[in-house]
Amino acid sequence: MGIKNIFILSLIISLVSCREKVTNNIFNSRPGKNEMADLNRHLVQKDRERIRNYIERKSLKMYESPTGLWYQIKNEGTGKNFADNDKIVMNYECSLLDGTKCYSSKDLGPKEVILGRSTMEPGLYEGLRLLKSGAEAIFIIPPFLAWGLVGDRKMIPSRAVIVYNVYILPAK
Image (cartoon, rainbow, N blue to C red; front, side, top):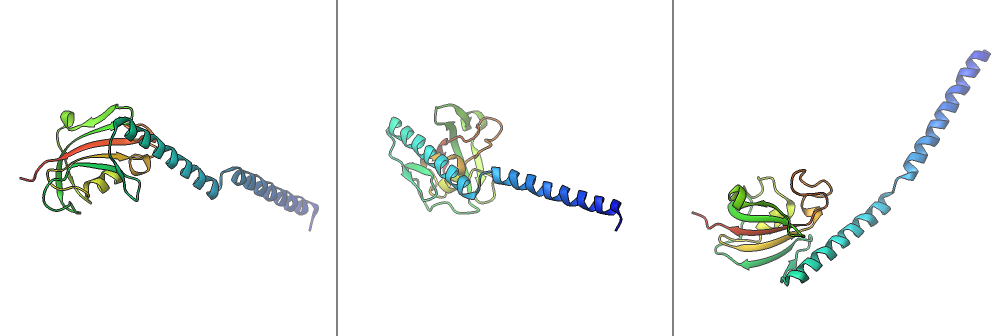
């Protein structure tokens, strides 16, 4: 092997080994799965504290579902609970914990959804399944069941807790 080939081979080896060190340093500086899980637990706990403070301030009697949705059914309504493929027409007001109104049927008209087929926040979907025709309820939806880290890029900011006041219009 000539000196030229030895030089090229040693150059390639040194470049590859440098690249591995740089790559390893980049990945080692990022938080791992455990750190990310700890951060998520911390954020969920902070959201629960914010929601509990809101509930206490407003003197609401709310229940928490196993997923983390908070709800109060103010009027039970009649008939059976809604299920997938049921059409629901509702009046609603969607706001933030500080009272800032985001969306409302007063401004946009009643909202019509078909459970399981319409795009909506997972927390709202879960809450609507608890209701019947004519029901009235309040849902407090934490970010991980609503618009998450991004928000809706319109009225709902990043990591927002959403409060829904809903009234299910009786079926015609």
